[in-house]
Image 1 (tube, rainbow, N blue to C red):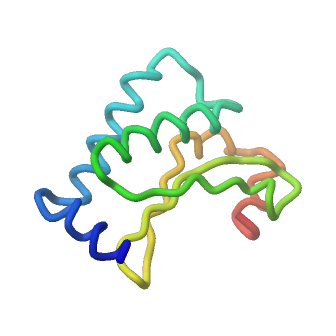
Image 2 (cartoon, rainbow, N blue to C red; image 1 turned 90 degrees about the vertical axis):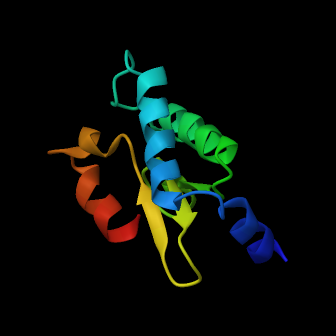
Length: 105
């Protein structure tokens, strides 16, 4: 039943355009906030903006399955694929946790 509701909510517009709109709105709202160690804030804002655009999403917490706690968003694209959105990804350049996140998160 949820898949039918999901399809109806997104029938009026392009899903990728709505995702881009939510990302842009989130970045504008948080423009003064650094990306370093703020993944929970960015993910929470983005999740709320996606939800307001009727985009089903899930905040993933790597601390549930990894030694490093990081948050990002997954959005089902269809039954076989997902969009992964991490607005604070750049904070991991040259950081020891980056390789672990790539392997496990």
